[in-house]
Image 1 (cartoon, chains in turn orange, cyan):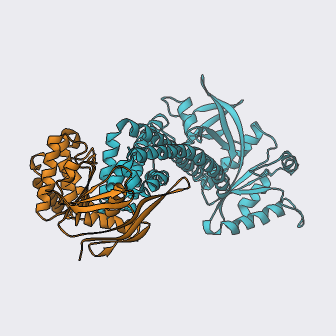
Image 2: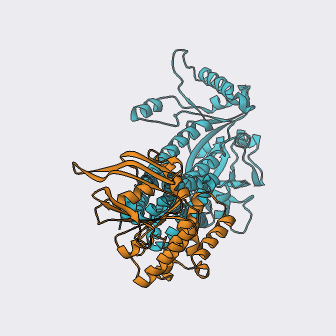
Length: 228
Length: 412
């Protein structure tokens, strides 16, 4: 069975009396371990798709099955649980808590899943080690470089062993060299069997993925294997 | 996520947020500090006032009855005019009560006036002079510090002797013993035979010890020919106070030839009546005072609400991130409630500290005023401040908890 199955998903927004079709009818299946890039110009609906995949938003019609659970019509609190357990987010602007050090930032998802302190620290340390930041666990975000911050964010996304990792323009705020490092890290994680989505508008970045889905006007325009 | 863990996490986040905005937190807390200081000061002052009133009234004793011509509480001029027409209470009536009342342990007539008192070149002004009998000591429960009280035979005859209160003794006699000395009370010389034990003062102001007590015949002969007496009665059994009161009423009506259909032409008072009146007054002061001081706490609470709205708006993105990685509504709600409650609790504790220092200061300056911060007031203050935090933090916290994670994450 597929890890992700979207069937005839649509998402409408009401904006000042006008109805906007952010997504029209999207059907999509993704298997465990895939590395998928979602591409499209701004306004194409790729962010909406990502929000739906990440259970941050719910669809207007259609069904979304994630890891065997139909998440299309869950309430806020159940969705929060699903996000906590199944999804790891990596954002363009890192979105780390500024006053907390790296370890505490990575611990956060574990706090929300109720894992006791000692175990929490151990798992969080492991996650930080796996992104190569074992030496900087006590540093706060403003004491780290952009690349290091994004690594902390990736460690945070990994720490709960989620079903999917969703990276929204993960290199958008980084110089190209650091961006390459982050993409190498994501590639490495993919090789270890993680299911990864990256949302981007850069072809160079999308090429790192094995499958590229192109969105235009709320529809899947193209869904094909990556060139490399 | 367990509730306890959520609270612990909430406290950590709250502490972080308060530290991150030190000045803002301090200013917000100031509103709560002022609120708690005013409320607790008021409550403590009312406590002290109550205690002072009850302490002072305990001198009267719960087992005492008083007969007088006038009612203790006169509400109108007409009432006063009506009561003024009543016949005076005579010494004979007092004697009759003393002899005939079965439920009385002791009874004594009493008449009061004010005079200046001299000894050599020293003078005490505004001293109350009391004419009574040897039974006075039994009805009042006072005791002697030195010498003796008026004897039964002195009470009957007119010997110029007197017993003085402690303040009179210390004011007129510095080093020598007052016993056996002659003092001049108004126009007349009286020999001091005893000094009363000190009893203190009412609220640290009106002294109870500024008095000269003399036999009734001496008082009537020298100061006031036809006074209206009061009668002081100590009952045998405080549980039978009401029965005693009825007996006394019957005796007085017979002695004063009141017709069965006419109302009493005298008044019988007891401690309870004064207590009731005073409790009503202090109760009103308390209610009004707490409402007024409560306003300042309310204003402080609005300050908290305001700053919490700012805090929520500033941290919209943080809320979005927390929600994205699995925080539920309840978790976010709790986080901000705890933050508001923490600010208020800090303010409440600081306020308590200030009030405590104030009470120490006041009791240092006015040693007779029994002011002391009570445990219930402290507990109430802490509870109130936490409650203020939760109430005023609720709306902002609710707004944060209900935020849509997509919109919150998009917030710049």
